[in-house]
Image 1 (tube, helix red, strand yellow):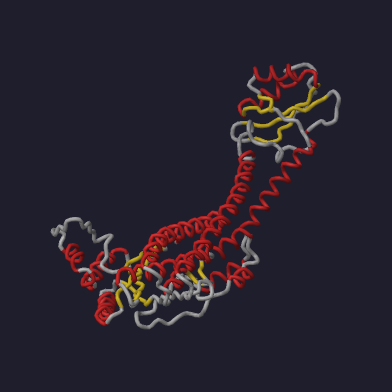
Image 2 (spheres, rainbow, N blue to C red):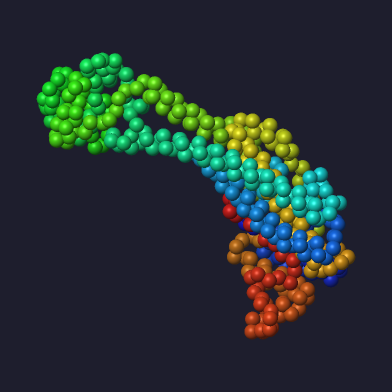
Length: 427
């Protein structure tokens, strides 16, 4: 499952034993993989500042999650025909998302832990705000390009009455630069082809004999040319309409046709360049984690994988990709990394507020094996840690107990610090 539960419990002897008991039960019952989640020693600050940060981090958490989901969706939209390869681009620091979460390490260089917590949170907030601003401007430009192209494509996909004719007609189909003669295009229903051939010369005076030619047809009818004198155009249109022939308003303009064709080619080229991915880049992306399976480190053995690539290395490796896709890859990674750092900050702040000083708690990451086991896993956790809040735990285990002024639900209340990380919407 692409779901994680991030919890913390006090780090005293009793609770460390409870963590070990929880790990034993979940392992034997095949409920979850459990790994230690390392959080640095931050500057605690004042109680008021922690309360304020608790609220701010909650909002920032929601914003960050929304941002990375929007970026993931943008990757899907940009990839179009290569949607099966989307997961190869949704990485964090060069590794797949599950591996990054289960082997999380605080980035001291980017977010120095010795700074006040307010400063660390402010740095992350500004980073995410800048990414969102860039995302809006880049996707707006891409969507404008896509819309313009779709509008042109629609013009070439309609029926003979509405579609553009620039990709159908040629210069040789028309009498051009004549003071007296003009070539018209007439749409004739398929059942009336024979009637057209027999009558078009007599629909009006001054129609050039044997001047008709079928240029193209669709399932409803055909597009014919006919050449006549300019001064009988209106009379010919009237007679044609009476016979269920429709004169299409079109006059050959070589410059305009060339401009329309060049515009279509330019938009196609620009759109392709925004997301084109070289075979080399795809191969590199898919070779690292081909099946997106990771080996989760058991609790108490927090071995780390090799360090991921730098942003510069990832950008150079993606040189065969279009600028929008390359930007999305790099900044999705940055936003996702920031999001998990926010989770770590929330665990620290909430643990200090709940368990008090001095700072002493253990954070653990649980990955439920399957959706059907989450209820049982919740029951195990509530049972193991019920001593952290005996009153709440009692009400959870015995739904018949009512405590005035206390609203509890075993789906949204925990006697321990708890946060949820759901990656399923990124699959």
